Length: 192
Image: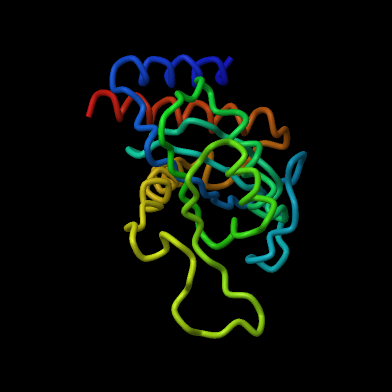
């Protein structure tokens, strides 16, 4: 039911404000999950306490277009394809840029993003024994960082107590809270 509400709000946002397809950003946030349950895992950044992740893809204004949840121990790169595939509305055939941080700098993510006709702007992750010289990745310096919009949207979600700490054992219930919060973010973007 709340997933349907989220989809309706994305379509309403698309009709009222026109989705900013040119720049899309992706990132995730971790939430503690003290009671455990499905879609949880040991958080590598919090002494292996149980946690969950919310993965989010937003347009250039920070409006959520796709949501995916996993355990806290699952790497970000595994969610990029799920987010792109599950964008709520059909993507138009225009120039679209995909912005992501170093957590998505893997060959399979680059291939998948390119396969879906994105111009990628994934921050370069320095490999072992790589020189510390200037990065030779095209577009690394010529385009300003646009990942802040997804960080801001995740900050809006983190202010909601039911999302900041996951108290639901069933992942479907917690996902319903995330869908409802994203629907409210979309409503705020339309009215503000």
